[in-house]
Length: 479
Image 1 (cartoon, rainbow, N blue to C red):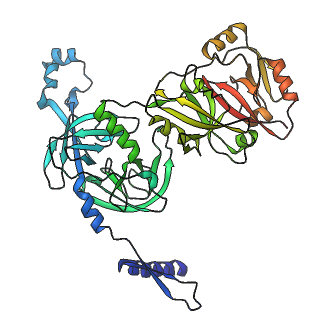
Image 2 (image 1 turned 90 degrees about the horizontal axis):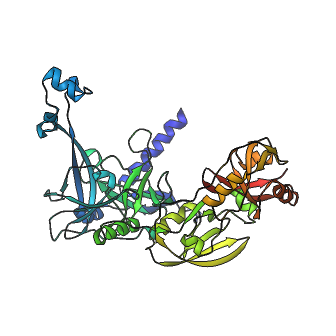
Image 3 (image 1 turned 135 degrees about the horizontal axis):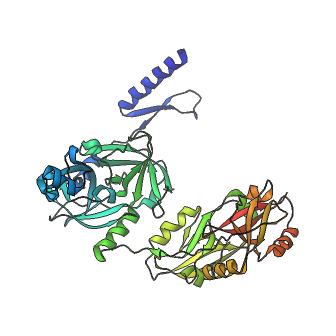
């Protein structure tokens, strides 16, 4: 208890010093300990300069209102028993209004405004309020759900426009501020530091988020993340929370991603994304060892679509992409955003590892294609394998279907049961189709046994399998 009290007292003293504009430390380079004064940043000028181009966005959505006693009652019953014409419920006076608040910022002086897609999605009316309290009705020029970016237009000229910066120049630990409307409290300024870059969030393939500890709450969405030079480096978009409010984890869309979307919406009215045609997975430590890599990095190609730019460039399953158009690929999540912002028709250089050797290929990126290769998983009886799984050859019908749906794969063996042992530890599951081990094709059970006999115990080998229409690699270690 005494230690906790002392800790509070020390904290109070430090905060007292900080409130005076300084933080006190100790200079260990001198024999006599002396305080070293370090000034904390003053955000007042920054907030004054940048707040002029931040806007508040209020939206209204109209929904048909049905009196509680009539909710769920079929229209014919309303008319017959209660004498109510169901069409009356469509009148404006019989509609409810749902209001929501958000933020945005001006990117061009003639009235172009950026915000989040989720701020304006489904809205019937959108009102933009400026810092000088003028209000304008806004039109949605375009929305992109994949990046959560929306472009608005108001009828105004000579507006103060934001200075656009670069998120790539941001460093972890640098100060940033946010301006928005948390819980309806307009033009609120909060500050923090960049906690991490290139964050990949669930169901978000095209955005390498900037993570900060800037307090962000409902109403901040769509507002700018600003660096100390007064430049927008991101759009505040999401928070991680178990309570619905700020818990120290905030995420912003890099401004390069947002401006790419905005420019396409201005010029083409739609967003086109680059398409390479590969299915990728993370390189784990076990997989890295199985590929002979000194450490895990890059994006492992698990599948290459037929007729795609990747196939035409000569990329194969098992290749590990480590660089895309001059940008290093440290994690698999680094690749999709880079491909996505590539202009269709652009030719890019891709550096990859194949069988431990570094090589470079060129690919001409096309517009995104939602198609995806699939593979049959087959049905049938078991034929025991000797590495901890019951396997069998594919039937002629299954093999024909496999070659039809995945032309690049000549054959494989079906896994029907997995026991304790190497197969289970690798992550193999019933229904998987083993197509290669250590890059040696496995067309049937006989070839599987032949390949397994050549492997050394204790070493990790890449095993390619088809699972639920997709291709993945698993690290196989024989015991």
